[in-house]
Length: 502
Image (cartoon, rainbow, N blue to C red; front, side, top):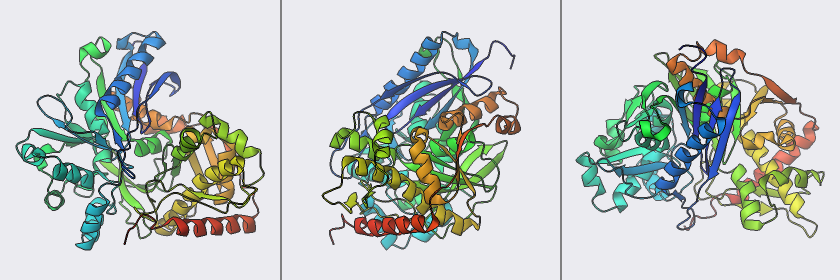
């Protein structure tokens, strides 16, 4: 790359509730950003959908907006990196690009009965061994099967090669390239329940088990490298798309957690903790996932992951459904107005519980209410729920890895909340470190794209650029910490299995 002209990387961050676009300069600093929320669709309890047109229009809209607002020429953009909400599943016509149905969102539990059937058949050990995942409605494979089972004629069309399946990155790649590229990366493929993370290929036995035609699956490529170019009319000139990674793996990369044992937690719609395990796929005995972190430099690296389904989405619920907040940002001041949650525990299992419980039938529960309970106590209990769920995962991660948690790097929108970070340090009994740039999901996508076109030389250059903005040290008494965590575990037991009818 020549210096001077090619000055920026454009990162597209397609999330669960909004699409964002960020421009990063050579120092990894944000030079511009734009964001747009889109509609959430809830056809029935436990179901969540997105309109594929909303995903595309919101994402290309903010991408074009941020470039125009920055006042730069499109030829100053070296590459585009994509990061995305993972597991959300789409199917569309190969010839027209028209979706055959709404996207089934990662949070959606409609395929829980399919998962029950797979477990009853004793397939969980095989699936876990091949994919590193547990059998759960969270992942893409059973969502695809549900579509094929429910949409007349689609399975037959897919067998003829007329239907494309994909996660959100695949959908964006398809639209950005005008249908020329039907591809995904290792990290996203590893979340489908259909991909062998050890042999790095779609698993024919699993495809047959779920009756998913191989012809509809995307080509799987390394996370860094040129996938294709955007259609010239989108930005005025073609731009290489050179990095793709699922949002949590992208955040791990953006946090410079590139050595085995390094850990990060992202507080977004959900809450996700990952530990880098190097080129070794570590199996979990504690309800964690073994996943591909990224493919880079002809190597594939792995991570252990614990996925919490509802984190920041609980704050949105307080705002949108209960009306006790005008904006999500108000929660910190409201929660600070009381010294503790006054015995209130909130288990936000709106769509079941993820790691380490994997209970699709758990539902949201609030316990410990008294006449003196206030909206401030509920606000504080919501922040505590994020921290408690993170500890659930951290405990499991330490058991599997044999490593003690000394520090946690945090990012995501809620990581800007000082009170949450302090509560998290207290609940864990470990230091929480917040980077100068908390937009590490988008930054990771930018880094992968930049490496893919030589904008940055190597990972050492990126690791050296990581800067701490603030460290939060644990201040709570150990006995108090353990008593409050024991209360949380009791509350979780009240929430588990609630939606099971028999």
